[in-house]
Image 1 (cartoon, rainbow, N blue to C red):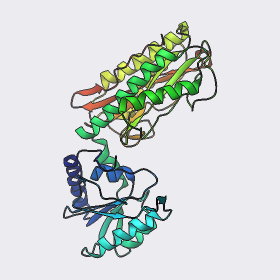
Image 2 (cartoon, rainbow, N blue to C red):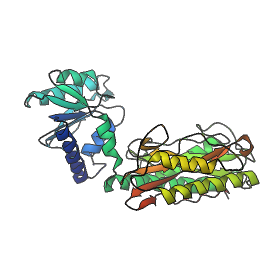
Image 3 (cartoon, rainbow, N blue to C red):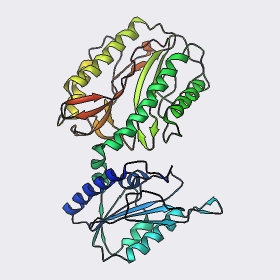
Image 4 (cartoon, one colour):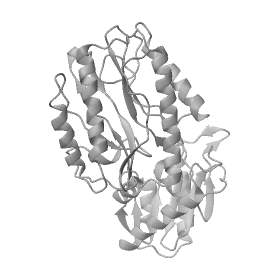
Length: 373
């Protein structure tokens, strides 16, 4: 997969241009990134945790990509160099040192760099030592802010992950019944997602435990009367979907479960009605909190949602601990919920939306019903 770009090369160049604009505002001579998601975001290529690629962008616009073992095709880079990640097929444990040595040789050919942007959260000493003569500036927040605005090539990957989610829910509704093993559900849903994507996933998603708010699948049969919260987050080529549906195991939800389901569905409708660009996420959260507080059963104390993209929890945060506002181009997951022991054990429904000029576009139009049959 690494030989072919995961993102559109022309769009990567546009993102590089946006980053150069931020570099100009901060008088940065260069930016060096090592986080796999940022290497992908800017060059189109991504490697998993086993490898240590590097990308560097000069204020002049020249882009360098350092990749493991073999050069790649059609990268959004002016120069591609490689380092040895394996010796006789054995992965080296000193890859960051190896890729940084290649970066060092490239830096030696550049003019003196006075101010360089790096990711404080992930920049290793191997890289920072190479820049000892420069002032290092943290660009984490700049990169995270840029990533909120999803370009068409990014949206295409998110939509592919969401298509896999829809297939997973279809399979889940066919197989969930009293006695079915949680591990069998998990295995079948992974198979469905892989078949939908046509390749291995880069993420698998969240909650597969029946009768609980969440958790991994267990060697346990589903019980009659339980609600099964499936919170699915398959990632396609690095980009995450994140949706949830709640299914009544015996296809006969109680009156209390139906009441909670109706209240949560109306919470989603409330968000769809009020959310728009420039709206404070705290205000959305508060209106939903007030609505859910009127439910005849259950309570709610978690977040309302978050952005998704190259990570499962990105900005903006629909959470009173952040002071974010919605922006055009955000892709958000909205997940109102109600929990109570009488619900065995609760209800969560999560949809993904694109923030547009006029409001929200629903990206996950899968059935919401409680019945699994």
